[in-house]
Length: 592
Image (cartoon, rainbow, N blue to C red; front, side, top):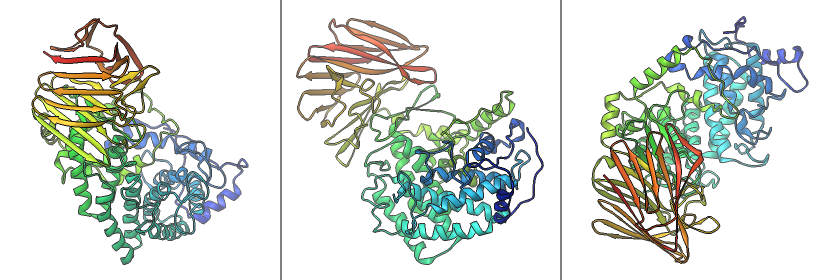
């Protein structure tokens, strides 16, 4: 580890004085020396800080003399009016104020000077009404304001405990008072809609408000916060269970951003509405994250996603990891333990990290989220392996037989479990956004695991009937008739009737397609490296261990199998099965 002398803690005024006297480039701040972390020096629960320790010097090097975090370290556009770029003030504040044997930046005058300048630029971007801009200088941004309240309130807590930059402390407090007042106004249409446009952004501001009001109490604003938490339960979460992202579900934003923000808000407020929302969302996750029977990870039902395409989650997710704060809820919501790492598994991963002789890998721009550090303030509440195993056993699809249908905002979500299969579908008069793909969305087998995962925002890797020109029926709304019976039967169609698909799910799956003209059956198969795949003119046979899956169309056709080179998973890959036909096709899927 590179070493240099530690300087005593200094005030903001002294930092500004140093800036005036040190020789610097015209548009840059002087930076402290870089550091090479020693893996063995970090406590297990602080290993996440190692890669961020390496960022301090180059990040300060890229800052302008005005305090703008240039260099593209975080958020886009990387322009001086984008307040979100400034969120790394928390990163500098942490290293400037925290005493660790491996942190030579505590009290360092150059880091404190950069932090002071960065805060000055950040606070200078705030509008008179309390909001901050993001995509244009005059924008009053929900995201920029919501996340600013969280990072600035946490930064102020660090500054107060360390007794540094007192003038900035006062300015942050005043800025937060203005922001909280703007944010908690129920008539503020930027923050509050019904349903919310981006629930994660509104929730981030509520979490920041909760901490800001602890630091600077105001009974009237506190009452508004209590009312806002109550309002969030109805406008922020679908009756189906997901959190609203452009009126639809989105695994990444729900699981990796919104749920941690709920945990942050709950730890600051103790509001019981947040626990109830988490319990409801955990139930939704139980249908939409598909656990591999070998325990290697989870496939996401992402065809329904409105914004992002998070396909797969490893069973153990080492540091740095965005969902770590979700475990705060496990004591209150035991079923959530299924979806977070266990204490024992994290301990093993961290021991292996510490024992490695490889250099700590550097983070790459702009994947340097300050959330990783900000979420460390609450400690860890990982479940035991036994608690997690019990929660996994309670997953809905561990049962052999159910039909679950959930509806909201013109969307129907279907989950059909039979002893041999678990099938998902997404239908309705509308899609949340044009990224979502309708029709059948996944196929899972209780021994073989995930066999089909339909992508969103991708016409080449969705389960669909495709017309010439790569026009799939799934890239548009498809309304369904839920016909019931045993085996369970449902039918769906394009608005024009160009494709009508009927599906039955029992001991076998039968998918019958009637198209108005010649078309192609397209199936995105998840293939393990150890699988054997055999394609013939009448079908495809996939052998996984002792399980044999057959996709059979019962007549000679001209199928093809091609790799989806950009879609990969650990130990797996995606292969696209295409079967051209004359407009009618009956596909039967069996397992033995």
